[in-house]
Image (cartoon, rainbow, N blue to C red):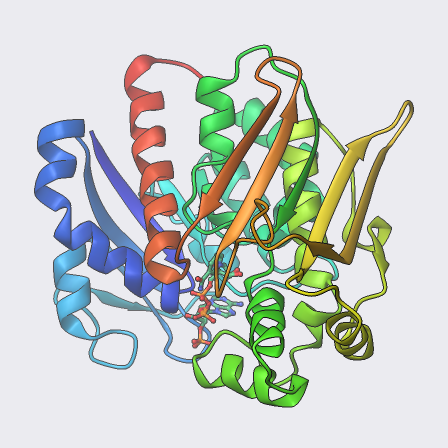
Amino acid sequence: MLLRVVSLGFGNVGKALAQMLAEKETELKSAHGVEIVFVGAITRRHGAWTSSEGIRAEAVQRSGWPGGDLPHGATRFDGSTEELARLPHADVVLELTPLKPADGEPALTYIRAALSAGKHVVTANKGPIAHGLSALRKLAAERGRLLRFESTVMDGTPIFGMAQACLPATRIEGFSGVLNSTSNFVLGKMEAGASLDQAVAAAQAIGIAEENPAYDLDGWDASVKACALANALMGAELRPAEVQREGLGREAMVAAIASRAQGARIKQIVEVRRASDRIDARVRLESFAAGSLFGALSGMEAALKLRTDTLGELTLVEGEGGPAQTALGVMADLVAIARGRTVGPQ
Ligand SMILES: NC(=O)c1ccc[n+]([C@@H]2O[C@H](COP(=O)([O-])OP(=O)(O)OC[C@H]3O[C@@H](n4cnc5c(N)ncnc54)[C@H](OP(=O)(O)O)[C@@H]3O)[C@@H](O)[C@H]2O)c1
């Protein structure tokens, strides 16, 4: 199965994906019968290109684009991102543009354009999943296409694919998780004696915190993830503004660290539960015993505990997360799409 992909956005994740596809090209073909080529890509500052033949990941990577020359055999494309999402000879659109937490745009528009034009879509962007999943799923079903988004929460950790493949007829009653790595990295540094400013500076120095880290520390990142999970796994129609964010932010973090019990660990935690007529979601700081599941997490580690009506509790723990792990989730989605097409109609 040949998959011709076009990438909307080609930053950290796009580059890591090209590297992984190049490294795994032989295995993808021999073990899964999947061959993946790029037929186009677009960035905000470095323009865009298309290729009618398709360019192997290794050649895209070798070109150094974006930043370097266009990949050999590529033609400059002067249209918009939305136009590229409809590229006639693409099978799959990768949506890898930055997150906009408030409304999931413009990624939502790009995904709608791609599905409407009959493309499968893979996105690592949790915004559209938090803000528009049910409508996107309906559109994908109408067009007989697949929409996959494994990398939107906990990088490439298999959450959505695992639930789909391994939890048949299972009702997910709720979940809790430590999902925002930046907050937990900062809290861990503070527990080790750093001031909040020193801890934030350390997070910025290794590239995991923005210049303004409020989006992580105030619980917005975790709220968007809570919505993506609740909407995908529990059939919710939850939006980030509906998630209760309680006692978060800089002052609350300083106070929680100062007043914690001996040896206790403070974590920013997401809690989602099914109530009789609605789904409740909260993000807050909570104290855990050092040896407990969430209390034992350190650095950039993350964990998600699902409550199900079949297995009881099921917990997924992520060690190290970043663009390489995110690329794995995207690659897994591409392989799933290739398999879906091989086995017949979706
Ligand atoms: N990095 C991770 O570990 C990780 C993990 C999980 C999920 N994600 C999600 O994956 C997505 C990509 O992350 P990333 O780290 O690769 O981000 P990034 O490094 O900031 O790259 C974003 C890319 O999108 C391009 N872009 C921005 N606006 C665009 C537009 N309107 N049309 C076309 N291209 C546009 C950027 O171009 P310029 O560079 O020219 O501006 C850049 O190539 C995000 O939604 C992120 O939340 C990332």
